[in-house]
Length: 158
Image 1 (cartoon, rainbow, N blue to C red):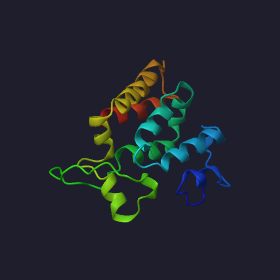
Image 2: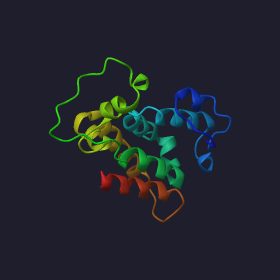
Image 3: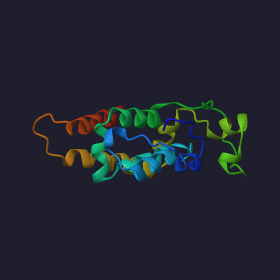
Image 4: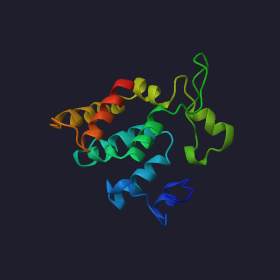
């Protein structure tokens, strides 16, 4: 977005939005950027965002592919598998700062694997994106096929 975005307010008041090769409307860019500011809900929200017939073709944009890869596959803070589970935080995550925030978001296998194990929403959204991609009838390679090929790669990696 050409500037640092740390919160949903920053995303909504950004003077310039990325255009992602004009694959998304400005309001959709704002929505996606606001989803990226929520660490604990980022994975299901972004998958739900792309589980849409009109937005699936936007995944032909390399910048959006890189963004989705970062959301899904960047590890984040790790917790030892044998560590006792943390109690439910009494504060809202954005209000938690420093080491306490890192500890609250830590997982033994990365955020995406944690979501796959503990959330059926992520599995449903990922399956929906794959089904939308498979509905496309692309007998030859076209620019639209880049989105389908990317979805197949993500599905195989997941």
